[in-house]
Length: 392
Image (cartoon, rainbow, N blue to C red; front, side, top):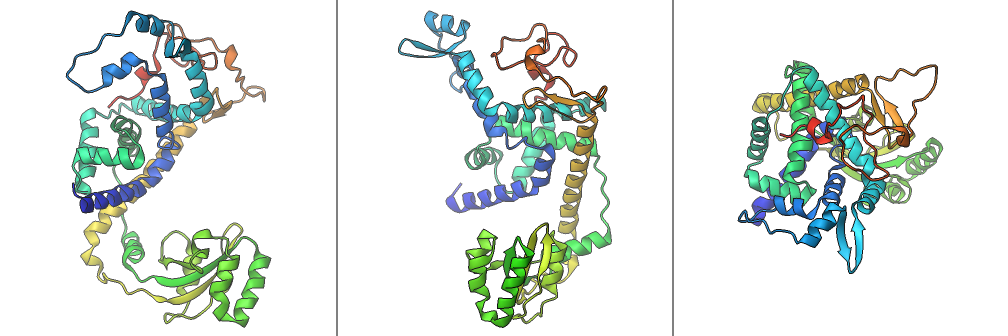
């Protein structure tokens, strides 16, 4: 792939990431924990495991007797005569990354349990097909798409499949595919994406009294707007540009800001009043005219808008479904000491989160002194954690 195509692919990857933002937020930390999960896996993998997973001619070098003995005793490295143990690495990983990785796993298990209760499955073939569909959408071969994910997002193929695509498909099935798109929704989306936008400069404040003081100065000398924006705006990006902001569109997400912007004269030069656009957020706008729409007839883009709206509404539905199943699922996090979901306190007492009081399930692997397994009532005896997670 040449440099021009690669740049377009990177932009496509950014667009894809933006389109999945609501899903990522719904899953709640799954993506954010991916690099952490990768580090934890790498830190806790034995040298034999690394060798077994490495590409090559299939011939596996046999570890020395000393190396086998060291691994059997839980040693992961040797520096001169000093051995570094599994417990040392596990303890440090637990201290640094445990809660993020645990939350990541918890969210996947919540989705898996909901799927199991409803008889829903997501196959490896479905995951493959979804990834192929995404790569085709952005006109990037699958292998190049994987490379871009790894290079631009530090996201390995296995993580992408397990922590992005599988949850997305599972939640989509849980949510159901049916969404209703009305003519009003179409009209608003057309106005949002293709309608005129207000070009403006903005000063943002976190204090109404301060906003009123600066507003008086602007009224006295409108030519000072850029200087006052540079000196007083709390929004760093626009402040560095003398108050310049991207053109403001209708139905973009902040109704109060949009109303104030579209009240300004089309020819520009008008200053708005002080507008509250959020908690402790006040803005003053200087209108600079309107943009000219490129597409003026909705019929030219109707099919594209319908497809986009269906995706947006599906993501909203997915977020609502995930919130619901989280509320219905009892989760006790023994690292953070917090419970969530379907909680029924007994006699007003809080759950006991003493990890040392938890009896490990029979047959579980040896763990660090800081790492405790789930109580036996949560997993069948001898169940490995990996066995209850999806493996597309």
